[in-house]
Image (tube, rainbow, N blue to C red; front, top):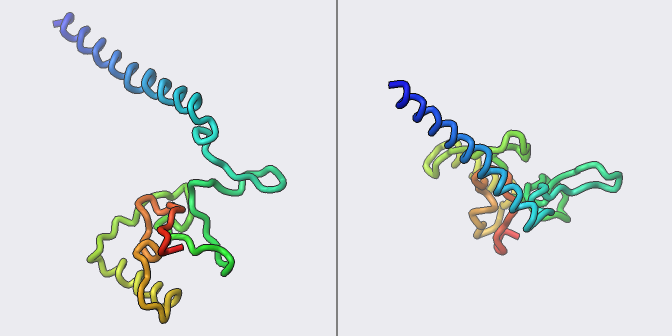
Length: 132
């Protein structure tokens, strides 16, 4: 009985060491060796050297000289990154999209879907050519 218990505990310990320590360290080292700038987080710094954003996270801009970003399910807060999990037939999502179409896209006959729908994590900076 003790031999079986010991072998099972060794198997669990070995699996945890391999999957939770060795593999992540291997992937981390590979990422830093191949693309060190991307692995470090793609932080954008301001003139004073302080971080002001990231190239892979959308920022909210209000001025007309900027592209309008995709709507954010997280309010452009990276700490609250998550999807809204609202399905296409959800009344709350339909009301939000309809309000946005009325306020921001009044008079336009066709609006690309990514201009009024949030991405999965809610912080995606990428737009299609039609939305840009």
